[in-house]
Length: 378
Image 1 (cartoon, rainbow, N blue to C red):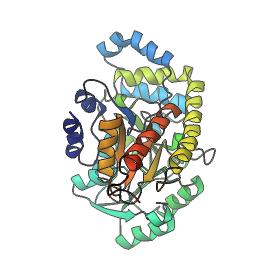
Image 2 (cartoon, rainbow, N blue to C red; image 1 turned 180 degrees about the vertical axis):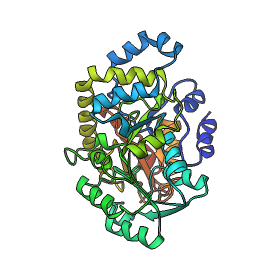
Image 3 (cartoon, rainbow, N blue to C red; image 1 turned 60 degrees about the vertical axis):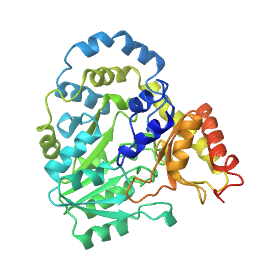
Image 4 (cartoon, one colour; image 1 turned 45 degrees about the vertical axis):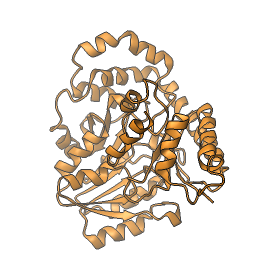
């Protein structure tokens, strides 16, 4: 069984196997998930009960049109609908951005979310990768990034804020300055998929500025923030011309009935959602402290709902990943298949303290106790 489970990782290229696949290979009981970056506190149990009661109607009937669902979301977010396009997950929107708005080349700091490198390469674009340096904690220097873009003659620039997998954060004023400096590019994309989890400043998003600029698109996630990856919904914000160009290509029913149900529930559960984000931020601080106490383990500062960690010298990420899964039933994200990273790094999702204690115990066993006397980390 262990061989079946761990072999799934060797066939998933730049991503991890799905929880459904892992569950099928492990006697129907899924592991504790430190891999998929999902909000563990939302929806609330009461919201899940409401969805369960309505399940038959939700999956039996067609959803409303994407325009109807988008209008409701925009009402909640106080955004003009003509500046918004909703997609079946952020990857659908990344695909359409690539097809419609990227003509020849795209620059992106690495490591980052794999679709920003893989998608344009799959369609024959030149991808100029700006390497983030471990020596500087993977922080993105926007001035150096701008020089890199100019030297390469790149026509599209991408920034993920916070970045995945390291959680690096850029303040709003710095992002706006970068957008203005790149005003002559075909497109500037600011991927804010994890920004809801940031607490470094009160208003970190640049959506308001994006709507006023001719070449800026901001990508936002809903599945990650709302703890509902499986529903597949996200949105982009841009000026009406850019947003309309993407929206015109999307199918009329590209959003499913679950997405509609959740969007229309949100206005009644804003307080619970805000509390969930606050709890994730507290858990992130506590989890960082516990992991930092492990000998030889480096934890990088993060504003996402995950932590990027470097394993002790001598520890190999795929071995740690497989042993954590098969011996402790804990799923972690080993980052050796991310461009710009290596198998010395893990991305660990922020989870409640009871799960973190189990994670720390498992890492202690795998990294130290069971390797004592053998060739292992210093």
